[in-house]
Length: 115
Image 1 (cartoon, helix red, strand yellow):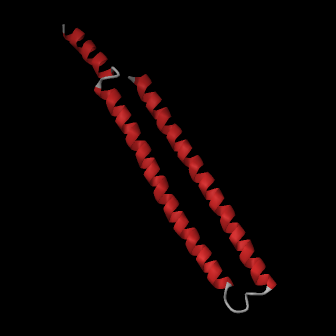
Image 2 (spheres, rainbow, N blue to C red):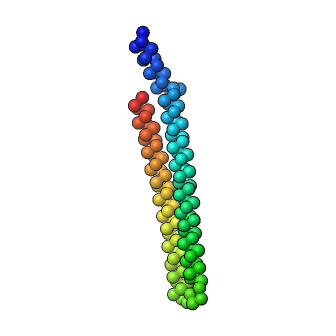
Image 3 (tube, rainbow, N blue to C red):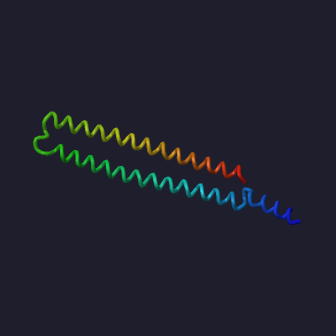
């Protein structure tokens, strides 16, 4: 009788309506939310950093004497580099988020097979 109760309890715990399955779904949702929040926070920090660098470049290049051909070329080069680095940052952050999301899905799949 005890063995039967234990088997039924195990089956109910592992069922799709059971607590382990529900908990797994909640954990995955929370991990995905945390990843999104973390990604957004990092993006804001990086955008602030790039804005500060761009402001400093523009300030330095607008000083008297920087209206020369070399100064204008230098400013254009730096602004191009900022655009390139922003693009790399955005693509890199997106790739890292996809990797983290896949890791969560893999973890979830492993949990399903273990129960």
